[in-house]
Amino acid sequence: MSGGSSDNKPPTRLVTGGRRKEWTGAVVNPPVWRASTHLYDTVADLRARKSSNEDGQFFYGRRGSPTQWALAEALTEMEPGACGTMLFPSGVAAIACALLAVLRPGDVLLMADSSYDPTRSYAEAFLKKWGVETRYYDPLVGAGISDLICEKTRAIMMESPGSLTFEVQDVPAICAVAKERGITTLLDNTWAAAHFFRAIEQGVDIAILAGTKYIVGHSDVMLGSVTTHEKYWARVRRTAQQLGQVVSPDDAYLALRGLRTLDVRMRQHEAGGLKVARWLAEQPQVARILHPALPDCPGHEVWQRDFSGAAGLFSFVMDGGGEEAVAAFVDNLALFGIGYSWGGYESLALPVDPTPDRTATRWQAEGPVIRLNIGLEDPDDLIADLAKGLERYEKAACRR
Ligand SMILES: *Cc1c(COP(=O)(O)O)cnc(C)c1O
Image 1 (cartoon, rainbow, N blue to C red):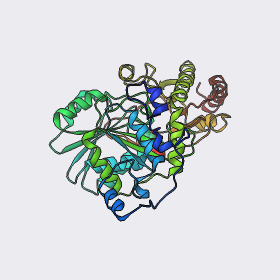
Image 2: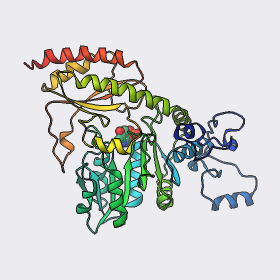
Image 3: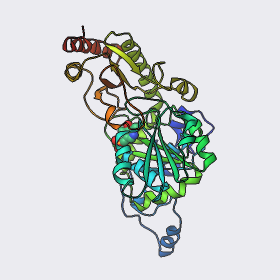
Image 4: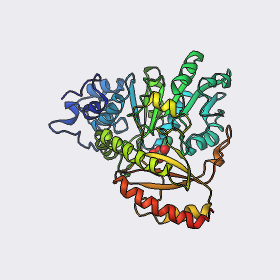
């Protein structure tokens, strides 16, 4: 085993990535290296190590050990054209660091209006105080982003599909414009988990994942990652190190274990999600399905062009009804938990409200929105559970 070749197909790379013999030893997975202090043989050895700063070089706990290096290398191998990956203790920490690494006081940041709520809060609360102005754009803007760029525009923060409402952005078109104007592009690629959308290959400079979701896949670890093109690698690495960002070896181990089965899990999430979404689309209580692989979803054609699959996370809009009806539906589902996060093996249902976070666009819908994380259960069982939920909804909503 030598770590595999980047010419291999994605599922193969998920299996071989980061499995260097010097890190794994005689076993399949790199052991959990718990360490702060790394010991040197001699003073000369200590001095020599200080000058190199790369994964694979023992130095000090904050620079990681084979457990973290293997995960970082495996994540880099998922993004052809990428130079390296930094790990973070959460997805939000990854987003915060990536933006800090490229922005300076006085800059303008363009951000998709459908961005993950904490990304927006970070811009409004932290970046603003730090002298960076954030302007929001319609996620369907595509090449039209050109009109929103001014002299101070330094970076574009994309998220595709958008959180809660799943608009698929024309990432290649936005990146092409940005490249021409010398602007940095960042993408929150969590939904596709890097597996169904190759961000760096599509022109993105900095690709961010909340590994907490599909990479870990078992709802038991918080993790973030930033994978960059060569041009941004040194800057992102330096910033992350200056901020003292580290991931524990135990968490890195679990994430790496999750990563090995990402392809089969995502294919299953995709199939289950589509079966449930198509069934919901036919129910009279449902007005619309916001699933990138279904035609009602804004940007569906872009998804068809750019993605190689669909995750198991989507939303649907109810036809009328209010908060009480939503609670009647969600509260008594047997197989869906009520909770944040997603990407785990278990299904979740979450009432969401896209309205308050929008400034560049307006959210208009026929009724409340519910987001589903379709886990690995048999979709027929999930459908039977949802069918009972819709009956409760119907009763509580008195739609007719
Ligand atoms: C969950 C999530 C994050 C943040 O990840 P955490 O690990 O929870 O901090 C970022 N972006 C998206 C799209 C997410 O869904």
